[in-house]
Length: 563
Image (tube, rainbow, N blue to C red):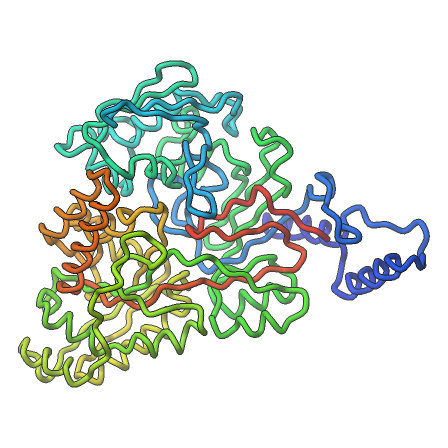
């Protein structure tokens, strides 16, 4: 009944705002004649329509329901307990962080308005935004931030329930662990916060901008405990309304949002439609307003269809296939290198990305400083791949499994088809790969627990620092179950290099360390790197000011519906 009610409300808004495409076309002609001074229908007007290309007023921008079509459901709405984009794209509109990244990947104030550090770089003082309320009406202040940090970092805290995977990625473990970064977090005033570090850490401020560290209402955490993932309460532009698993998540406008006059939309609905073509069809028929996750080949359909528009998310990702190096024969670098040479990466990019990707050559995307252009690639070479496989003792090949997610990802728009292409390439060197496909939440659970032999995967950056691509995905620290390093790559040398880079302030020196780490990665070959992508999306032409973020954590604060 919930979905029917939501869609009925949405249809009423749509009819009030313009009705069918035929009605829109008639209205466009009407305004055309007005522009030439021919008044055809004196006294007629539309409350929701911009005229003459002028800027819409705040009243004209306000109202309406936007339906965002996506390929998979969120895993949880407790940001500290997730790493996946489908969860973060929702929680980022419910919660807010102390700092945030703008579309140019520059740090900006959010719940913290100012910050400063001591000369030794260990003590950081933050001035917090005043007058901000959580969605439950309680106050945001320094005590609330301290409460959240204590929940995140202390395994003995009664509300520390879950894996909290991103905290140890960044902060060197939890409270009590030898390498834990935080010395103390203290409220030094109602709106003043002090964080003391044990050692200098170059990307520390970036950590505070990551969506996983959205500040939750202490009262809500005390009320719901582990259930906060299904009852999220933050300070963001939208409030949680309802979640129908594997169907819809509904958010409603935060009427008391601290940013005056915003958001414009009354409601945002995240609608799961697993199949790419079905999702695009839903956009064409007006059932949804935005499509995330498309077959790259469908971009021409969008460009040729009246009333919908193609948009592109700036590239800040990598798609790859990880070997489980704890399983034979993938513990042998000769096997890993042979498979790297057997897979035709350029052909995969040409076939499935429609000009919206480039073959990946490094675990860091080209847009990120310290990306090493000089890395020697594993070019497609079947004969050399066979030689390496024979040298490893597998002249006749072997049988294995290739795991893939069933839903599209920004870096893998058609994961099943890409897996089938890899399967075909591997057959050329005698490797029989059985494809195992599963839905998103199950897939994440299986891979982090090492149930795979080879697995399709990828990463969209959540901070503009090489640390974010290398440390979570490739450090020895994160290769214990539940692992983010699903290659289970446990190189002491590699981890030492990226740890030193994390603790080095000089960016030139950090670049040297990261490039040395990339060279080592290439030699060890824990992944087959596939593509850096520019993910395509599509929207109805009445959706205004939707600007896809490179990190996929799209805020809906400024979005409005023009008709």
